Length: 165
Image 1 (tube, rainbow, N blue to C red):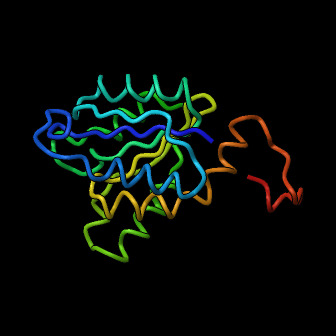
Image 2 (image 1 turned 90 degrees about the vertical axis):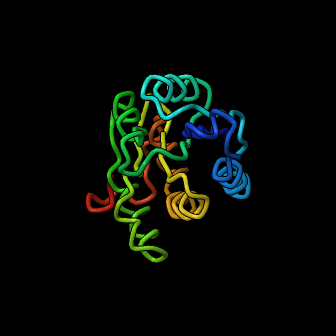
């Protein structure tokens, strides 16, 4: 399965800081059987982020963004994601924050989340390397099923009403 990594960081985009979270997220995806086809860095700018998400989602079914999920003034990745996504998946953010809370009390400040754009799944993970990997690992078990649903495969192994999505 193909994926994209979009690193959102003014300093990485300017070349004044090395991107650590993007490569770690890519490795985490590759370890889970994904092939990272796209890897780009954009500044903390809504227009740049929305354009990168749209472009990636037109080419691959899984788009991961790293960075810009905090509460600082330039952290606008969630806003950009909501602008382009048709549906927001609140449960992804809940899982990521719950997992992050095991490592740091500051995980509650994360606005990491996910949404859908056409048949693509867009997942925002924190920019810290540890937060990016922890967040990605906790939601990865959901990704194949989410992508199957987005691709139109709505058949379930158990058709009981309480098991439906």
